[in-house]
Amino acid sequence: MTAAIIVIFIIGYLGIALEHNLRINKSATALVTGVLCWTVYILFTGDKEIVIESLTEHLGNLSQILFFLMGAMTIVELIDAHDGFEYITRRVKTNKKGRILVIVAVLSFFLSAVLDNLTTTIVMVSLVRKLVDDQKDRWMLAGMIVVAANAGGAWSPIGDVTTTMLWIGNQITAQNIILELIIPSLVCMLVPLMVMRYVFKGKITPPQQKFGYGGSTKSTARERTIVLFTGIAFLLFVPVFKTITHLPPFMGMLLALGLMWMITESIHSGKDEEDRKNFSVAYALRKVDTSSVLFFLGILLAVSALESTHQLEHMAGWMETNLKDHDVIITSFGLLSSIVDNVPLVAAAQGMYGLDVFPTDHYFWEFLAYCTGTGGSILIIGSAAGVAAMGLEKINFGWYLKRVGWLALIGYLSGALVYMLQSKIMG
Image (cartoon, rainbow, N blue to C red; front, top):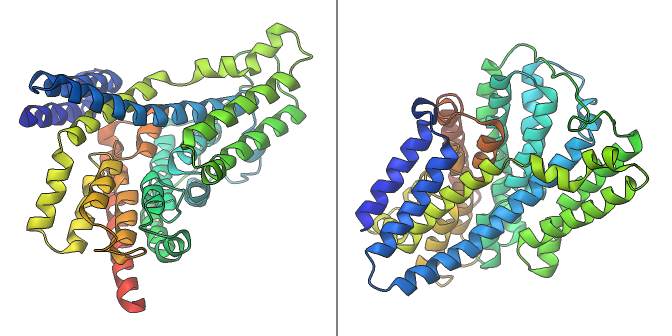
């Protein structure tokens, strides 16, 4: 049974990677892969109720991510409908690719630490669409956004879901993770940035400006300002809401969406129905890329099947038995997180090693936070940020691997080396 699930998983990943060669949409492949993994699991298991309970539990976790994703994408679409990003794009005075690459990378790195890598990627990819017309240039910038957002999320307790898991589990403290990981994370972002800046030269072609979603009415300066700043404020409010209430992040995102809905309805209340509908949340929801959400669902379903059949735990146990060196084990965890979701990997590590073995703020937990937070950048389907960018910009799996993946790997290993040296020097 487990061998069949692993084979289906591998074939599904190959199908996603070869999307353009096979001419089959990656969302369809991901959904079929996810469902088939669970189908094999339940058909070859005696107790069907255990499988149903496991699927229901995983679906609860998956729905949190999907609702969060849809809420963030809707808020971004709403800002876009009001041409709110013009406020930012007008202030980008350069048209040189190298400078724009640096601006986008630095913004993504620090914004990810305050929001999280998924929300940051959605916002920054949407912003790049307003700056750059050529698709391949946008792909290159989106690739850098994924690398920078994942690196930026690793050193913040609210920047990546795995770092948050370790924070909530008392394996790390907020102050220490920031102090210990900010330099390795910065190196992880800067190394690919420097190489990419060397090859990403020339001038960008800005897209033709289009206002609204096809309606003839343009938003006013007042409306653009209100929607942009309230939208960003609500996105920044989400991690604060989580910290205060301890509710899952998707609850804060849904609250933000509801408040944005009320505000936009209010500021357009004086317009007739025809003009108002182009700026409504209901219309923005239609613009959300549903196929990317379904792709995300399929991928997570497939990974959850591996987790439920204890394949990830077995992998972690095998590493502990055979590799022995914890630096090698954690680095391997990071590389593995580019193939499977980093959440079950971190959960497996938390289950394997208690606080009596590695106390709070131990080297092991900090290095684990870095590796699982940044390793997913190596493959575009290795992180939530990468999956979101792939869905939004229709990035080719092979193109990313050829142009960005190897740079992300060099950055990942460079940051890991810096952390190890930093720990040896500073104790």
